[in-house]
Length: 502
Image 1: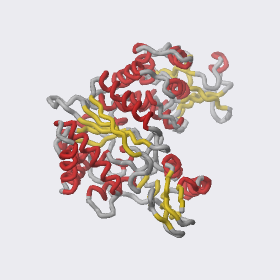
Image 2 (image 1 turned 90 degrees about the vertical axis):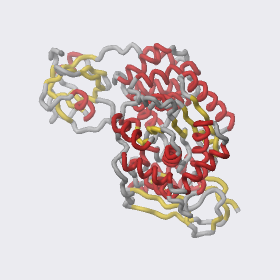
Image 3 (image 1 turned 180 degrees about the horizontal axis):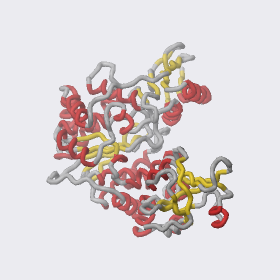
Image 4 (image 1 turned 135 degrees about the vertical axis):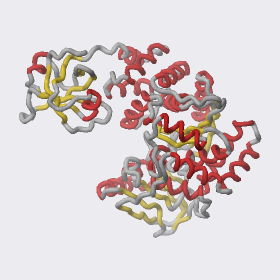
């Protein structure tokens, strides 16, 4: 129980600082002066029942009392205090694991104990966003060896809860490392595989550097914020789920790291592997396929790099007790037509319903991945497994299974429509020979995806399409005119993201 010595009265600032707690004090406040607190000082705040570490911002507005300490939304939430409550203030304690971060910055390897302490302190909110960013940057660019990645994976699993599936000896999963706009195969694969009898409790992250993650796309269709108990109930009923992993404290340190990665637009190799595998292991998975798209504007640009990443995934998986099969796939062009949560959901439904206009590349990729999961189940040939997956899709069993999952997770939502749309037309004749995946993804993000579920874009062409002036290239969707204008300005400055020859 804290003894309130140096105290100020709590005041809610109504400022959203995401997951980093921030406090606000007058520069001429007696505690600021006596303790020498300044901008970005790390402080320990305490009530009689709770304590947190915060980053200090200095306020010079005289309407803010020198007897008050302002709290951001997350700071007040974690401290569980009310306005006017007296808060104890002192210098934050030294976090010893930061010395290991500095060790890594200077190029040294970290052992399992050091990595575990870093992840534990991050999970306990001991690190500021700047310190988390330093750790991520020090680990990026192939700076983690296999042993470090194994230890990072194990530490991230230990940071949260773990699902256990009783007598089921094999639990399956699927993941794509990303970098390919529109490649939303997961709902299709999960439905096909679970319709075939596989147990596949799929928990997914939200987008890091892309216009949509599986959790974002599924959120446009159903509830993805399931508790652990709700996930168990859905899987018990349907054999599968399509939930957001961040809502259930599975590898919570990973979610904290992902938040900073998103801000840095960074997805380091070692962190990528540990992130993916820690979520699989925490979900209780024993077997998983990893889709690695390869292309010059995908996340993995060369076959050599893809083979190296595949080998590392397999080795780390083996060390952590999960069987991994990596599949190197075509990442030279976008998949499907929709980019952004609601637009990708439309493609998924079209494939499930076997519409003639459904994206065939999305369907074929989903069937290929499903066949590999079915093959892992009992070792049947890939050709036989592909026939089974195709039969499940075209018989309507996959659609039925998908609807069962949606129903179990809270029911199916009606897809929304964006407030603004713009159709971009071709200005020259020729054949589309290339589309820059990275720039196309950024265009959809600037329009508001994935944070606005209805924002994004719909492609009307892909590589190989023949164009004449006036043909539609894409339709852009946004929830505000400002976002629309911002995205269009980016397109006009990067018009060569569509390479048209002839």
